[in-house]
Length: 261
Image 1 (cartoon, rainbow, N blue to C red):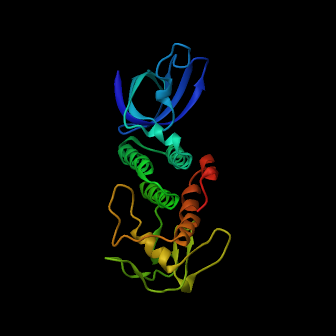
Image 2: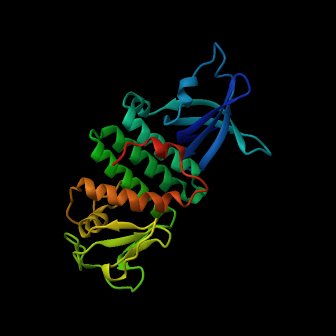
Image 3: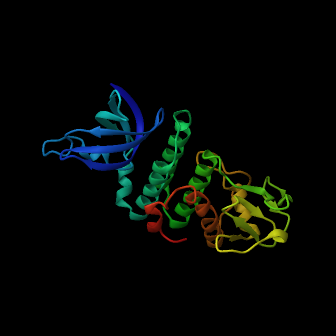
C-alpha cells in the first residue's frame, strides 16, 4: 500500500457501488483510481472523495493498469467548506478543472500541486469578489508560467521596444497610451504597433503596470503592491484567460459559471 498527499479533482460513478476518482498528487501528478464499495448503503468514506477534498489517499497499483485501487482517504484542511459559499466554490472548481486538463509530468507534479493548494487556501481566506477575481488572474498567470506559455510583457511583441522605463519599486510604462495584447501570438504590442481584431485585447498603461506586479501565488507581489481597478481586472480577464483557454481543445465548463468581472 502506497500513500500520496492529494487533492480530488473529479469523481464519476463506476459500476453500481464504486467511484472513479481523479486526483492530483504531489509526487506523481494526476492519477485515477477506483474506490470500491463506497456507494453502497453501508459504505464508508464516500464524502471523502468529493471534488476539492484535500487529503492523503492510500492506494495499491495494479499491474498492467493505469488505474490504482484506492483503499481509503484521510482528509486534511477542510476545503469542502467552500461549498457553503457559492462564488468561492465556482472559482475552486475552475482551478480544479484547469489542473485536470493540463498535461502534468511526475517531475513537475509538485509545482502544479502547490499552485492548486495555494489557490484553494487563498480562496478560502478571501471575502470580496474583486479579490477573488484578482486571485483567479494570479492563478491563471502562474499556470501559464508552469506550462511554459507565459506571455512576454516587458518588450513589444512586434518591434522589440522596451515597454517600461522601470519595473521596481513600482512599474512605469514608457508610453501612457493604450497597448494591445495578442493571445494567439502571446505578447503585448506597444501603442505604435497596436492592432485590432476579434481576439485582440486592449490594455491601458495602468493595467500593464499592474500585470507587471501580478506575480504568482505563493510568492510576494513584485514591486510596490497595486490595488487594481475594475477596469484593470476586466482588461486582464480579456487578455489572460483566452491565452490559457486556447491551450485546451475546448473551454473549461466551469468558466461560463464564473461571476463577471
